[in-house]
Amino acid sequence: MTSLAPTRIPIAQPMLDDEEKRAVLAVLDSGHLVQGPVVADLEQKFAEWCGVKHAVAVSSGTAALHLALFAHGIGPGDEVITSSLTFVASANAALFVGARPVFVDIDPDTFCLDPNLVEAAITPRTRVLLPVHLYGHPAPMPKLREIAERHGLLVIEDAAQAHGGAIDGQKVGGFGDVAAFSLYPSKNMTAGEGGLLTTNDDDLSLRLRLARDHGSVGHYRHESLGYNFRMSDLHAAIGRVQLRKLGHFNTIRQRNANFLTQRLREVEGIVPPTVSPGYTHVYHQYTVRIPDGRDVVQQHLSESGIEARVYYPSLVHEQPYYQSLGYAGIRLPQAERARAEILSLPIHPALTETDLVRIFEGVWQSVRRGSTTA
Ligand SMILES: *Cc1c(COP(=O)(O)O)cnc(C)c1O
Image (cartoon, rainbow, N blue to C red; front, side):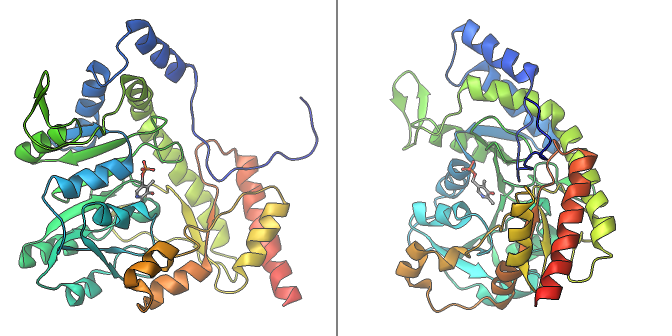
C-alpha cells in the first residue's frame, strides 16, 4: 500500500517481531500451555533484572496489586494511602479487599505522591502506603519508606508503568515490601496480558504463590484461600522475549524524550516533564503541561494524525463509582490542576526521527495557533 498522506502516530505501540512469534509457537508445540516452566523462568529473570530475590507472575497488574494487599491480610477497616492521579486499578486494589483508599495530593513536578502531605493523612487505621511510579518516574521512595517505618506501615509500589525506573541506580520493585508490575500491551514491556510481583521477603513470596493458585500446595490440597490469578506459559513466552529487549526499549524512550524536551523547552506555554536528581525516568508516558489551551493542542494534534492523550481525564476519586462511595467532597488542588493541564505525547520505541519531528512541529504550530485565536 502506498500513500502520500502521513501515517497516524499512535500513543502506544507494542514492539513485537518474529522472536515473540517463535516463542509462542514453541510453547504451543510443547503442549504445556498453563503456568509452567516458562513462567518460572520469566519470574527468575525478572527478579534478577530488578535486583530482588523473588518475582511472582500473575494474570495482570490489577491482580498483582490485589494480591499484594490480600497476602498481607489488608481488609475492612484498613486505610491505604495512594494517589488519585493514576489508573483506577491502583485504588481499586484497596476496594477489592474491603479496605478504603485515602487520596493524597501530588508533587506538581513529578506527578507522583507528595511525601510532605502523606503524614497528615495517616490515621490509626492506615496500614499501607501505595505510591504509583506514574508515567515511569519513580515515586520518592526514600522519603516514603522513612515515613512508613516511622508509622509501622507497609509499602506497596504500583510499578505498572515503571519497569526499569530507578533511584540512585536501584531499580523500582525493591523499595517497598512488594511491588506490582503490569505486562499490558501499552506498558514498557508486554506479555499480551500479565503482571509480576517483586519482593525480597521469602515468606511473602510463598503466600503470593499460594494466593494466585487456589492456595494449592499439591494435587487438590488447598492450604489457604486463593484465586486463579495464574499467568499462562504462552503469555510468559512473550514476556521473556520482551524482558530481553526492555533495556533497549527504555533507552529509546529516553532518547525520544530528550529529543522532544530539548526542543519543547524553547516553546512558550509548554512545560516538558522533569526528572528528580538521581532518578531514572523510563517514560511510559511523556507528559507535558499546557497551562493554557491544552484541549486546542490535543485537537490540533489529532487533526495532524498524532494521537496525544490525557492520562487521566478524571481523577480516581472523581469517577462515578468513587463519588457514590463518599469521595465527592475531597479537594486535591495539585492533582486537579494537573488533570486540566497534562497531555501525553507519543514516546514509544517504534517512533522514527521523522515522527518525532512531526510531533514537535505539531505541538509548536498548535501552541501558536492557540495563542493567536485566544
Ligand atoms: C496498567 C496499570 C495498572 C493495571 O495493570 P493491568 O495489567 O492492566 O491490570 C495498574 N496501575 C497502573 C498505574 C497502571 O498503569
